[in-house]
Image (tube, rainbow, N blue to C red; front, side):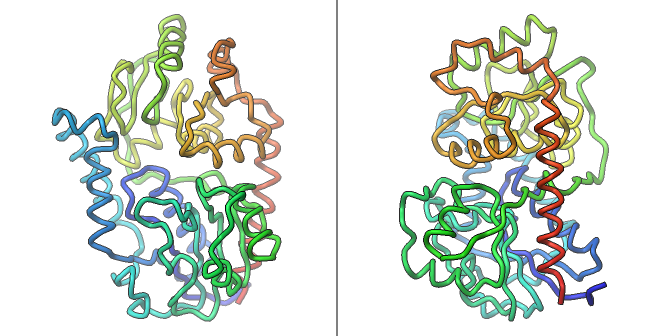
Length: 357
């Protein structure tokens, strides 16, 4: 067995976002479970914090017109703060002064779109490309360029920085292509930590007392929402919007904690989403689901579903007229689950390899 190492995980752990929280937690708990002293690197920036809080209170620009959601969103943000306080964190340091961080035997960058140069507040922050990190070894796990397409070149500064990584793994084909073309190495394709490792909530949650489908996301188109609503009425299923307000849902749970989110997803009859982690958790708990393709998340969602052979769960404008709501009643194709299991083996093998001292 490899010797225990001091390991730092560098990711977007301060987002008020269920996927961001759980992918950070799943990865750090998995590494700790392998016998290492792993912590999440607790970077701080007042500008980033302000942006996160603003996004937490106003996840949609339309909600600037109304303060009715404030109390519920405030409860959600408090729940995230409480959940984050239980994470194993390093001493706090400045995001833009990584030299002030503690030293580590190994730093793992990733489990989010940490290399997305188009991200509204993290885009191009040098520490995520390895600059100034106090560790002799740098690797990535499930890192992503998000909606930064492979058709655009990386600025040379960032491609040069990524060459100092000892090993690179990514979670989507777009990122794989960028690393291959711009960095000159062949990265390993691995699963998002939420699909690779089992989330373990700390508390129980109150579930609806009748069959329900989770609605997870924002900005659904009207035709999509109308068809989902008709399906739910016909199927006798209640639509529960989790974490975000969707007026067409039967119920909103805007204050849902990260633990509540897991319990609601795990026990849902089906999932309706336009978020990447809406797909991830549907797959994790083998729930029937449909995902509407919207531009910002299109790259990573399309790559995920194509990799797993789950393309038919994606709804695009060109297939909106089809009877896609039937997919909300049908169990996942066993071939999808088989592909996930195969990728789990590859992902664990990669992690085991980079953790060897």
